[in-house]
Image 1 (tube, helix red, strand yellow):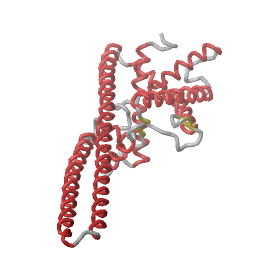
Image 2 (tube, rainbow, N blue to C red):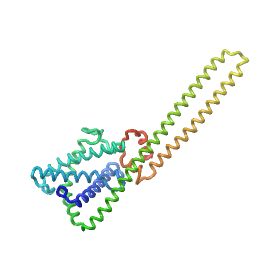
Image 3 (cartoon, one colour):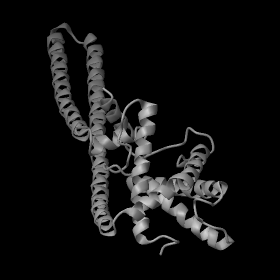
Image 4 (cartoon, rainbow, N blue to C red):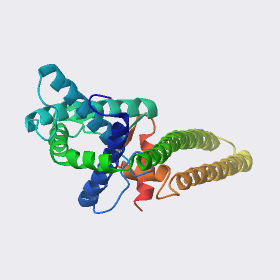
Length: 305
């Protein structure tokens, strides 16, 4: 037993609430944004943070009841106790999940920085209260129903379903992590090419500037030249102009080639709508990257066209 639950129940409750969390996220953004978006971090219809949150609250509720000697049956325990435990531990899980995702993948998948009473953008008072109310409602009203459903699933069928679901879940985690790592790698390629374009632009500006200065100096010097040397002087000026034009054409050709590479990377990243990197960018429209924010903004602009 794990704090009043069998491992079988824990695995089922985690999976059920992960699916419910995904439905909530998709429904909320369908209402607020007017379109359906797979809002999960994973490709499948799961938001593990919801499942982990409910399991954590059930464990803490049990331990608190044991410590203070009150009945931990969710159908009779005080809604205020459920609210307090929910607000504390749901917020803690959101804080830890946000911090770990930020440090592991160098990106903010959600950000509450624009809301009052936030902590580094990971959590905020407004959503902590919402989580507390939601968990109090779920545990008091919904949990008894889910517990009854789990208990009525034939044991062998339930075990088989759990095995299939968790194999799929682990595979989804692996695929998603590889996708995020690939996204970071592609963003790094974009950033490097754009640095090369900027460097070439600076070099070309310097070449044109120096060439122009030399031409101006020759013109000034030419005013003092004798008439018989004027022809040689103008020929020299023309040669400099042709040299400058040739360098400009070479620069424009190289720049066009590099810009084409950037567009190719953007196309590769945004190719698939339902899976892969495009889905993640669409699912988290406010994602902020520590290093490649400009590149992410460019991809969003391409997505919105």
